[in-house]
Structures are given as C-alpha cells and as structure tokens.
Length: 295
Picture 1 (cartoon, rainbow, N blue to C red):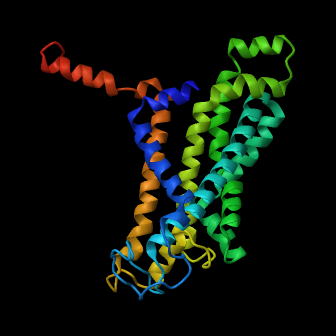
Picture 2: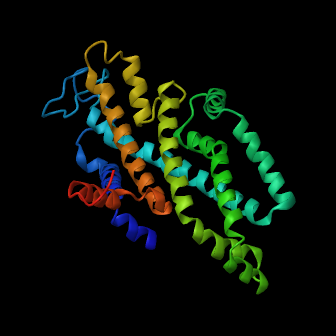
C-alpha cells in the first residue's frame, strides 16, 4: 500500500498509469469500439483513413482500427502472461538462492549462468523456427522459460543483503520455518525490485513477441500487433503509400512501451532515494535565481 501511495504522488507514474489504463480499457472494450470484424473484408484494399474507417484498411480490406484494438488483447495477454511467469520464476529462485546459500545457491547459480550465457534473442528465434508458426500462448511460454535469469541475479543479490538484517535473525532465533521467513520477512522487502522486474519483463515480452511475429514466426491467423506489422511488410505498405497500415501498430507498441517505462522509472525512483531529484532540483534552481545558492 505504501508503494501504491508513493506511485500516485509521482508524476511519471501517473502519466504511465494513465497510458496503461487507457490501453487496457481499449483492449477490454474492443468489441464495443468498432462495428467491424478484425478478420473480415469491410472495404477496398488500402483505403485511406476516413470517417468510415478511422485508420484506413489493409491490403485485404480489413479495418486497421478494428485489428488494432482487438490485437491489443493478444499483445497485452502475451506481455503480462510472460512477464508474470518471468517474475515468479526469477523471484522464487532468487530468494531461495540468496537465503539458503550453500549447495542450493550453487545449483541455482549454475543454471542461471547457463541461461545468461546463451544469447536470448537467437535462442528464441531458433525455438520459434523449430516449432513453426507459434501461437501467442507458445510464444509466452517460451519467453517465460528462457528469460528469468536476470531476475534471479537481482533478487538473489538483494536477498543476500536482507538476510543479514536484525528482523530476519530474530525470526530465525524464534524458530520460524525457512519458507515463512522467505515469504513474510524477506519478500515484502523486495516489492520494489519485483515491481521493476515485472514491468521490465512485460516490456521485453511485448516487444519480443512483436519481433518474432514480424519475422514470420507467429501464427498469421492471429490478430495481434506483431502480425499487423508482418502483414504490412508483406503488403509493401510504405512502398504503395499505405503508411497507416504500418504506423498504427508501431505507434501502439511505442505508446505501451512509454507508459510501462514511465512506471518503471517511477518505481526505481521510489526504491532508490538518490534518484529523487525533482523537488530538490527545482528548489535549488530557485535559490540560484534568487542569489541564495551557488553553482
């Protein structure tokens, strides 16, 4: 609750949350925002934006706005689903490795280093190509199972610091079981780290899913932002002057990334007091202008 209150008083967080909430509402109410089906031909090929088709049509005559708002559902589901999986795996393994130490820590570190050594994007490309036309669910699972190593390292490092604090030592002296100490004593002090890990993982998952689908490794029958980019590329949208076909999903991805990045920056500022320079910087600037401060 304390973190939420601080977020609501942070300008970056408010802007980011507003953008994210807007996109979530558009995805949730997609069927009510347009009368057109995202998979049916409703107009002429590459029809320019108009009152009838707000963002124009594709080469196959599909309404771009309809595909954009319906595609938000798939892209958000993959992003948040994979982000949640990455965060859960990274947090659980990181806390266990940092608190238990010894052989457990060495085993987890061994597998973590193995995952970190292998380049992530080439591995995803190989797995997706091996599977063929991967569905959004398959892409989310692949991302979740191959992208958790960074979260383990960060969570483990913070856990090593927290385990030396007095309240953890007191719980151990009282005979509290290990799982209770990790869940009720250590985890609440990692909320900011977990939040940063989750937001970063969602951004990574959304962009990576769009990249894989843009390269032709996704299911072409799916309506998502990555498939929209793939279809626009195959239709040579920019070459024929149908800029709306390509820019609509690009703008949506950029807007989502901006909102999530602002939330991530806000959480980082709250977690790290050294980054909270906004109010102090403004006060120092006023003092310099009044001649009370020194450069």
